[in-house]
Length: 153
Image (cartoon, rainbow, N blue to C red; front, side, top):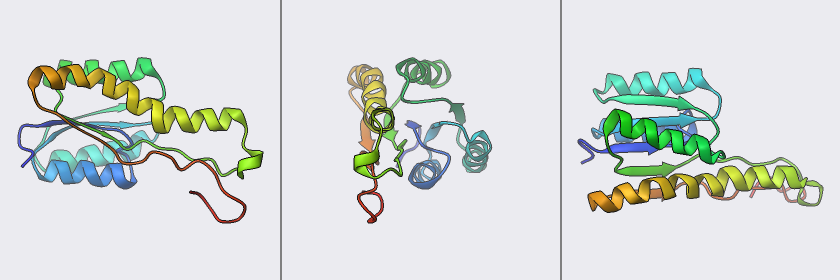
C-alpha cells in the first residue's frame, strides 16, 4: 500500500507519531523521522522500522524553526529525491491554567502545533504538485492549556 513512498513524520519518537511511523514502515514506506530532543527514543523507532526492511533517516531538531523545517526537506530530497507524505504529529501543551499562561508559553504552543505544519507544508507542496501526488495530515493541532482543574484540552 505504501510501497516506495517517502514519508516525513514529525513527533516520531513516541505516541501517535511513533505508531504512524511503524505502521507506515510495515506497509513499505521509507521514512524521515523527526523529534525535538529524545534522540535515543527516535533511534529506537528508526531501528524498529529498519528491521521491517525500509530505509530511514532521523533528524533531531525544533520544527517550530522554519530553518530546521527547510533542512528536513533538504535532507529528505538529498536522501530520497522526493517526498510523498507529510504527517505533522509534533505537538506540545502547557500545564498552566489559561489565566496564568504566559505569552511565551502560548507562542511556543502555537509555534510547534501550528507554525511547524505550515513551514513543512509550504516546503513539500511544490514537490507534491510537481509529482502530481501527495498526502498531508495534521494529527495534533491544539492542546494548549489546563482549564481550571479539568486537565488539558
